Image (cartoon, rainbow, N blue to C red; front, top):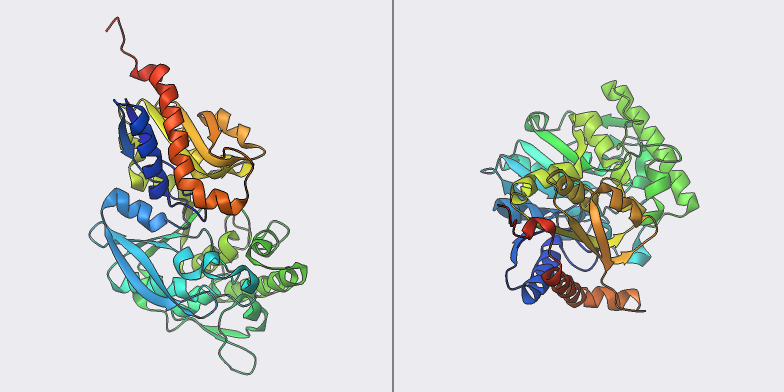
Length: 387
């Protein structure tokens, strides 16, 4: 029985590769004829580089860059296709997980380190950059990132500004003349699966600011700063992209890169599924198992589980989803190709216990699924008596 295992990561617990390996162990213990094919998938956040390198056997590059609060962090990106394509996850340089909860404040954070990764990859020869923007700690409209790429920001007194979320409203003048020529010749694709604009009630500050530590007053300051920032870039480029779907994702990073460097906002899940080679892996498969930390209504809006199930459905292959929890609205996935879904939590527990035990619990759940498959295999794996 060929089973393709293609989960997303389990946030703060398991990478997509670790989750896939745990599922494979459980299935193989329960099914003597299990041919498990691991295809870890990422959503553009933590684990994206590992997922792509696992599928494409590329090169990992580590770089010391500036973290979201200005500290030095060891970040990494991947190179594939003989180094012509770089895969970068901003979470490794500008991610929320890099900041203790008590210090999270998007007025003080910056995407500068993400810009350093882009510049480093470009100077290594990459002319296509795939930028995963999940898990960020920032709402700076991409100003910090662009500053690392050569943009200079000045206040009304001619003093340079750092490009944090809190300084956007103080920018009086911007100078783009130091941006290297090769960046304009590089295709930057921002992997984005949300439709939020930069500004307004559904915009970057209002929707994503609180997730990054912003209170109501902070959200108001961020909104004011982003509006001012967008006017400056409109004056410089003649392009008003603030209402573009996806421009508000990840604190507006894609907005800044699109406005100044013509970066493209592309469907993240679709792009990463293609890079991982999931379509090829599904050839001859009897079953697909996917999953993530929490399945809920948002899972059906272009996330990994939805994308995997939809693709498997086109091959007429049933799909089972395994998750830490099954939240409200996860039932929408049943109309997108999920056959059934299971939670790995055995009973009442706190979040810390669930995170610490997820590897073992996921393996045990896969074992139980395997036992069920042993007595009731998917139709495609059953021998056709008329063949």
